[in-house]
Image (cartoon, rainbow, N blue to C red):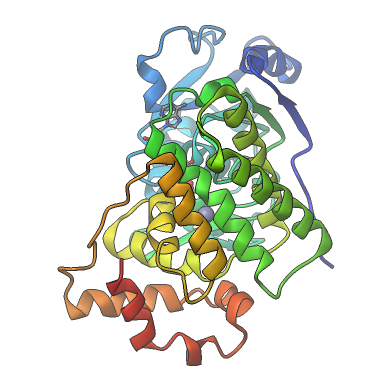
Length: 360
Ligand code: NAD
Ligand code: ZN
């Protein structure tokens, strides 16, 4: 049975982040219970942001989002927390940031109530117990990490990028406050925002579809079109629309599968260490063979918003690196099958895959 779950509670609107302490108070059984707050390192230098947090009682961890989350990083955060307190003494975890911080918070929440290491739960439906109650506050829009049922982590030893796909990974509460995305750097805003557009176009072009996923995808794409065709993609109005596009895009992914872009993008992340959303855009720029209309539209968005992409990123690579790129793309069987059918390897031969990488 495909029994789908979405985030249960959310507040939406400018300034709603100020309700954080109010929401935490509802969860505290005693005034001593600690909230653990994971915040993107960008907010270390912004004053006022965490004023409502009692830093004597609550624990704040600043997360360096220059690195995408790894299983080692998650394990070491869990160790640090469990040395200080047991999970009964924690009223909630809060993740404030982009996909990196939102995913770290989800993974730590699951591990505080499930023994073992992060890598034990990389896969589908391996988490046994509900995690610690968690609140997500996205500060950049696009990945849908705020509402998806996964938290992506790099497992360096296994050369594997995979999340804990589980209903327990879904946030219990969201605060969707578009005012928080005002400070995002323009290129980054575009790259991350485009993740919504790409997830949804991949879903809609795939064979694994259902009515609910389609409606979420269509709405998300419609909002992305408004944002990226507008005169200023980062106006107050457009940042609000982008936050909604991200939310609906995340709900869409929970009900469908990605396609050709994400496997190629994963190859770039694993072999060249390029971050997810930038890697997606680099791939989308050369997807004429698979998504001709959408590739054309993507280029129009880039022109309209004056966005630059790095060029020639595979110019200097060795044959061994191209082999690795091929292998780390073709390993993503589920999405490739969704996009191209069970015989996808006859379409995506090694030669074809490498030719596409050479165009980036
Ligand atoms: P991010 O967390 O990688 O952050 C990108 C940059 O934006 C960082 O430099 C960060 O400091 C900065 N930033 C964030 N908010 C800001 C703000 N308000 N003002 C100024 N700077 C700000 O962002 P992302 O692109 O949202 O996330 C990428 C991650 O999400 C990857 O690790 C990817 O694997 C993961 N991801 C997860 C899912 C999921 O469903 N769980 C889906 C897609 C991607
Ligand atoms: Zn993505």
